[in-house]
Amino acid sequence: MSSLTQKLEGLLGEVNGHGAEDLLDKAINKYFAERIAMVSSFGTESAVLLHLVASVNPATPILFIDTGKLFPETLDYLHTLQQLLHLENLTILAPSRADLSREDPEGILWQQNPDKCCEIRKVLPLAKAIAPYDAWISGRKQYQAVTRAGIGVAEEKNGKIKINPIARWTPEDIAAYTEAHNLPEHPLKADGYLSVGCVPCTAKPSIDGDARSGRWAGQEKTECGIHYMI
Ligand code: SF4
Image (cartoon, rainbow, N blue to C red; front, side, top):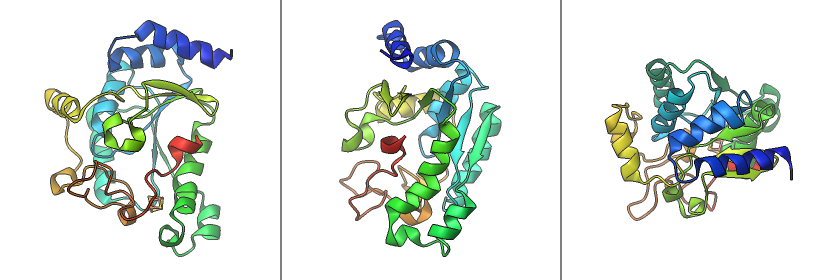
């Protein structure tokens, strides 16, 4: 059994039945101290996990990928939350210029090959930034999509530990935490966006669809790939 597997088992054994804050505290300050980062899209529900992480340790590295195709409202929201939550260690990642000029010189790869576009704009920058860490924290939740219904609060994948502290939270839990801590909403939420990514690939969710049904709407694609490839 690898040392990472042992740490994962130790973490899960110690926090079994406790809440997201306890899981984060043990992961960030004990089991993966100095070896863990959070990845955030600063999307519609990101404030909750950012607040939890900042409460546990405001120096936790936070990685954000600016794909070059984001809504300006998302960048505004990032600066709002950075100031409000006193995020001390935020890094804004960007795609490699060489990859963009070689693969997407006109900025329309998303139309022709969205998987490749996500690879060069999201997956590769994140894979490079996250390489030094043993573990990373994600805000994925089971209710967001059928493809996420089976995720647990912590898992070992591709040689790293992925912590999903609010995987089992419901939309009501998110709303209650947001209200209890007076957290600002993403500016586009009031317009009906329940999940926000890049401009060309984000629409409002369909009436009978899940929260992520507006992402790559009309395509079979449901994920950018970071949760499969990293
Ligand atoms: S979400 Fe769309 S625009 Fe953004 S990286 Fe993926 S394919 Fe490209």
